[in-house]
Image 1 (tube, one colour):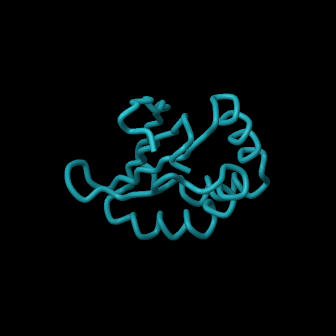
Image 2 (cartoon, helix red, strand yellow; image 1 turned 90 degrees about the vertical axis):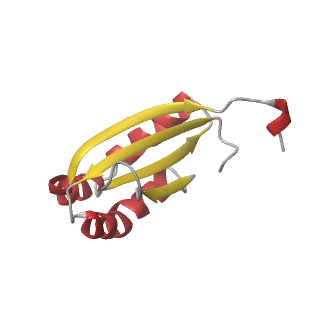
Image 3 (spheres, one colour; image 1 turned 135 degrees about the vertical axis):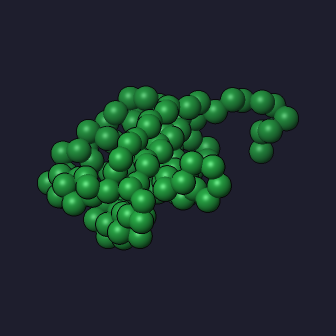
Length: 109
């Protein structure tokens, strides 16, 4: 999915010592919903150096309208609120950035 021109870059700060629980909940409850409505992530990472206890994930979209439609479908999924409630005690902060690919000719595949 690296060919998507719009990337939703999300950073979640997880409470100390809560990362294993968060990752387990995400994999079991959220990931199936995300895969169904959003598609596979461009990347899913945890921080090791610098700000700790962070999850960074990137999701690709064809356009902002595509992103909004897919998010709306995910948010309307009846299982999504269950995941949000189950993970709420683990998330201390979150950031969301929408970034666009730069079309450098020298980087074109």
